Structures are given as C-alpha cells and as structure tokens.
Image (cartoon, rainbow, N blue to C red; front, side, top):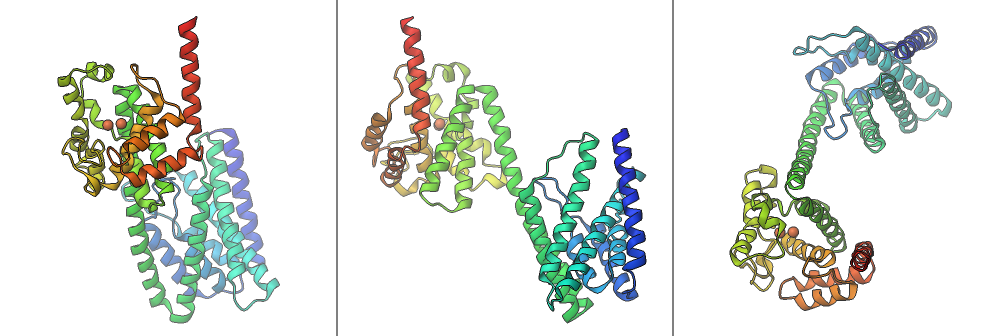
Length: 424
Ligand SMILES: [Fe+2]
Ligand SMILES: [Fe+2]
C-alpha cells in the first residue's frame, strides 16, 4: 500500500474515532432498541440480498441512504452512524478474498457519512423547528452523498486507481435516494413496520425493472461500438461515412421531433448501417466508384448482409429492417425488394437521405463533392423519387439554416487542397 494511502486511511480512521466519541457523548440519548434493531436488520438484509448496480457508471447505488433517512428522524446521530457502519456489512459467499483494510475503510466511510449527515439533520431540525422535515432531510442527504463520494474518490485517486465521478449520475442517485427515504419514513411512521417492508420490496421490483432496461440500453451501445470497430478494421472510409451519417441522422430526427427512444434507435443503427460491407470483397469496396455490373450486384447485397448479421441479436430485432431498407427508393425503384412509400420503415427513409447527403458532400473520385446549392438542387430533384418528399423538405430546411455548414466547409477546404496539389 502506498504511503499517501496509509496516511489518508489513518486520518480517516482518526476522524471516525473522534466523531464516534463526540456523538457518543452528546448525541446518543434518544435510543429505541426496537427501532435500532429493525433498521440495522433491514439494512443488513437489503445489502446482502442484492446491490443496485448502475451498469453505465459503475457507481454502486445501494439503498443505504433511503433507510438511513427514517433512522435519522427516529434515533440520535450516534445510533444512525452505527446503523450505517454495521448494517452495510456484506457477506460475500462467492468471494473469499477478504481484505481487512477495505472492510474497515467501508465501515468508517459509512460511519462518517451517516453520522455527520444525521448530526446536520439534527442541528437543522432543531434550528428550523419545522413540523415537516423535507429540508433538513435534503440537507442531510447532500452531506451523506458528498462525504461518501469524496472519501471514495480520494482513496481511489491516491491509490492511482483512476475513477471518474459522474456528477449527473450522482445527482440522479441523490434525488432518487432522497425521495425513497421520504416514502420509507412516512410508510414507517404512518403504517408501521410491515408496510415499510412492503415498500422496500416494491422499490426492489421497480428498481430491478429499471436496471434491466438500463443494462439493455448499455449492451445495445456496446454492440454498436464493437461493430464500428469491425467496420473500421475492414474499411476506414465506410467507418467515417457511417459516423457522419449518424450525426446527420441525429440532427434530422431532432428536427422531425421524433420520440427520443425512436431517435436513439435510428441513430444507433445509422452508425453501423453499412456493416454488411464487411462481407463484400476488398477489391470491390476499394474500387467502389468504378464497378462492373456484376461487381455492383455484389455490392448491392450489403444491406441484406447487414440484416443477416444483426437479425438474431434480440435487442436489435426491431431495428434491423432499417438496415435492410436503407437503399430502397420512395418510388419503389430501389433494392433489395423494391419497397416503396410508407412500406419503407421511417428510419430507413431518414437514413437514405443522410446517406446520400454524405456521398454528395464528400464526393467520389469520378465526381467532385457538391456545394450547398448543388446539394439542395439534387435533393429537390430526388424528392418523391429516391427520397420521402416530406423528410427531404426538412433536410433542405436544415441545410438552408446553415446547420451543415461545417461539412461544406471541410469539403471546400479539401477541394482547395486537391486543387493546389494538381497545380503544383
Ligand atoms: Fe449502404
Ligand atoms: Fe451508407
């Protein structure tokens, strides 16, 4: 263990001892054995049944604070600190590696956070003399979260085990913990212990449900990122093209005011819409501007290949039709099936315009990139034929609003660079 970690831990243990002495002497009179044992037992059971785990940020969001908030109202700070320190002990059946200093650190950290939060609640409550305790409990929750995360963050930084704190996630946890704490407190004080336990079971069911959807969303993003790497390893241009198309898709979907969930799904699929090209021969991919009829037929299969790759992934099932249809035309003249109009999924109609927009603005070796006016003209020409006319109008509106000017600027710079190379 590093010397600075030792110094930090020693300081923390010392603070914990001082706080225990201070609270023990001044804030331990209000004690009810029944409430104390009930709270400590509930916390212990909750911590050992399952922990709520946030898959995106890896911050453990247990239900410690919601149980501590009612305890703060019912007991003196000294007993709340003991509940926080001891009630949170976890018995890990599968993990035999018991590290004593980690164990002591967790106990003292929770003792400090719980004890100081309860002390502040006590002082605020006496000072404000309010019949309802929403504000003192909110202040106590802030103190608990601050101390908890500060100690955790510092010890991890000192041991050079880098870990970022996601303040948005922490704030969300703080707000949800605070409201859960209020619900639990009122359940306990108005309806008794049985109702309190029922509320905790209900919270578990809801949280588990929320967690499973969060995990699903996370694995969706991970799958997309992995496929992006596969595309990149095969063909660098396609990766860049897919990324740009997904950005355009995002902007267009926002302007169309699509539901957030639908928008996210279309944008995620846009990121890998040409995934099927990994099955197309390198030779065909690299000379994609100058293909024979036979080679072009092979290239056209990439939308079906993409569909085949993703169709068996459960969480993508609903969206693979977008990939399958992204080269269909509004007038029915596209491929692979010649679908037309609204038979083409909305996501595919959006994607098709953004896909073409990227091709127009980046150009091909046989065809230079187009400027703003030329792109608008081309889109107008293709509205109702290749593209959905309504979505095309939204896209043109965005171009006119200069939303995509960066893309045009980059292209102009590239063209000027090419020009100067040709003349040098
Ligand atoms: Fe494509
Ligand atoms: Fe594409």
